[in-house]
Length: 199
Image 1 (cartoon, rainbow, N blue to C red):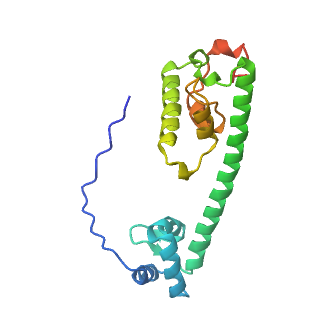
Image 2 (image 1 turned 135 degrees about the horizontal axis):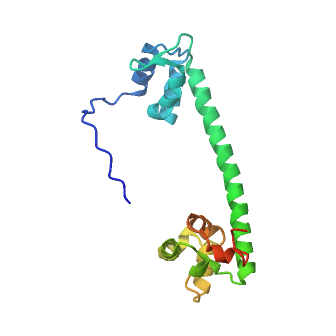
Image 3 (image 1 turned 90 degrees about the vertical axis):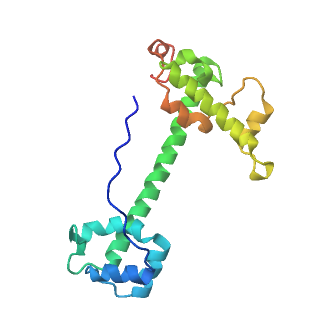
């Protein structure tokens, strides 16, 4: 069931654009200590005022005046942003490694168990046939979209396989279809006894 959209607010947006020096002055007027205004303006230019703003909340006394606690320096906010960015990149790198391993394990297990590199085309292995149909549409649409790209954009392994093989109509998938497979791979319970992903 589709949830209806939330109602829009009734406020009128009345904020005006400000140059970086004005943004630095605004932060300073709220009590943020900024020893090097030029350096702070450069950081705002490269990061963005509204991207950096959420990191200031920890150092504020409270809303709605957004005043900073005494002794808060611009570097404290910047260091929190840098730490969060580094942590996010670290976590995303770790998740990508896990995703690759799980994709490989899933594809290898299912392909060898059913002796079929196109196991994900078999609707009997999926509990939800509707999701299975959507998966195949995603795979086909992705393949067709990639084939419409110009040759100078480069040919990855998905396009390479798809161009060489006509039957079946979808390519052998590993990482290319893994995310979509995980989204709907609730396999048939009866298939579990035959060695599917539930094991």
